[in-house]
Image 1 (cartoon, rainbow, N blue to C red):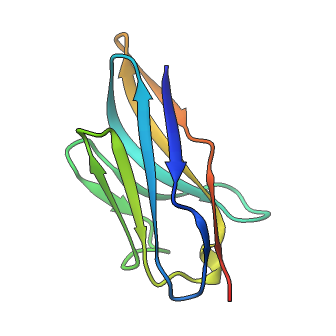
Image 2: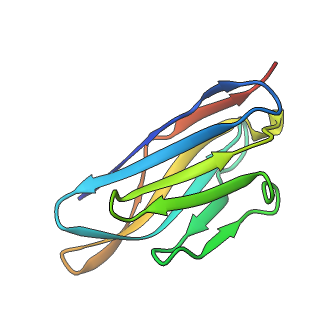
Length: 119
């Protein structure tokens, strides 16, 4: 089993910045692709950004130029740097990871962290 724990959410004013972190933990695992999703109030969950183990990234058009995803493989941690935040970025942000354990790749979710952009 792999556990994902997010941190870094909170309340920020429009134009501000936040950095989310997600750390994976468990026994004998290798984390492959890691992603951030978000779910705005009353809306479906949507993909924000993905990063492969090798560092290739894909960013949603809605946040391109404002958000950046990165990772530290030694720490099994993925980050989401969010700049120039807008009220429409308000959502619960979820970490997602594909991890190889006991020869099988499985998909895991974190518990989510709230990001609220408001003056």
